[in-house]
Image 1 (cartoon, one colour):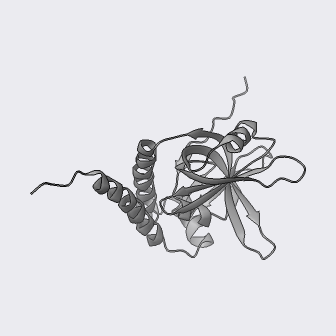
Image 2 (cartoon, helix red, strand yellow):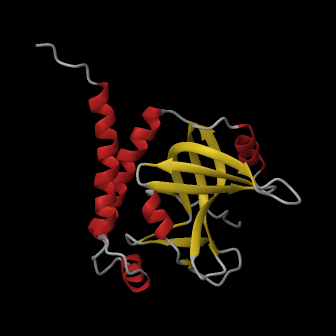
Image 3 (cartoon, one colour):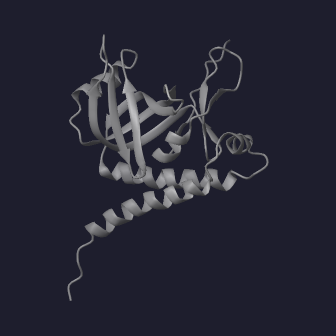
Length: 199
């Protein structure tokens, strides 16, 4: 009996780290082996889960529909691209009324530009409407996961930490600051919502 491949867990990652994850690799020569993005904090990601604000959508296709969406999080922007192979995500982006909160599960995708830069984007498996509570929960969970990765980064048994040290110049502390920035963004929301104390 052949065993169906199990789906990779969708990693939670903030925009700055995601956009820095320009190195991709496979763990076997099998042509159906999954592609992984190497996260600079020392982990691999075949799928990513993001909650943020969809701020704009645009059909950039020539012959057929090919939609680009900007999903903004507390530390930067995720670019989401969907075409004929992602019909549900394409329909969502076509009908979306930005700005609105969205949750996206997708695969990291890299593209080398003519000037040699590598752009990282998300190829969505699913996009759905979300809300502020879910966004804040995602920020807290993503902060925890990022700190866990940073904690394990220098561990000698962490092969992805070693790969990240070899592939990337960015200090891992950059992403600890990103966590602080993200958490401060929702701390401000909570303070704004507090009723003012009466004297």
